[in-house]
Image 1 (cartoon, one colour):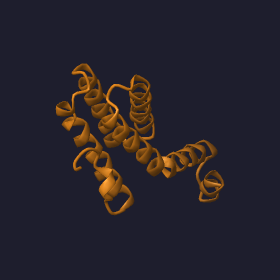
Image 2 (image 1 turned 90 degrees about the vertical axis):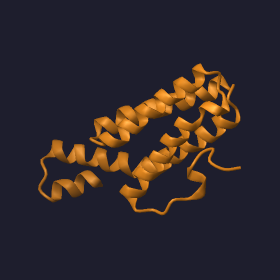
Image 3 (image 1 turned 90 degrees about the horizontal axis):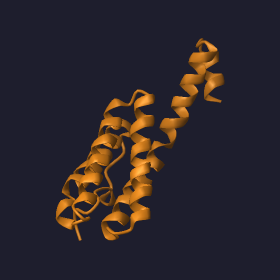
Length: 131
């Protein structure tokens, strides 16, 4: 549908396909970011769950790569920093005291989404900031 609309508005078929892929990707971002933030909260609560860590890291790594390929450089950079923070946290044994950089990148994800979508911040968006 997005591709057809793009072609109707004068884009070449290849450009229309790129446009349609970007529309599809960006329309799924809110759910994808929510899933990552939910996984981060689960990981904070279950720091020794190696399967959850691997799944969360893979999701973040995939986000960083796909965001870059769709020209969302800032989102990609947040993803790269989040992945690095996860690795450092894991290297320190999953200590709660080492969680702050992950929480900071989670906040950066929420801020990015708020700027892009104009949505209001929800309290659950900031992983590990209150209990």
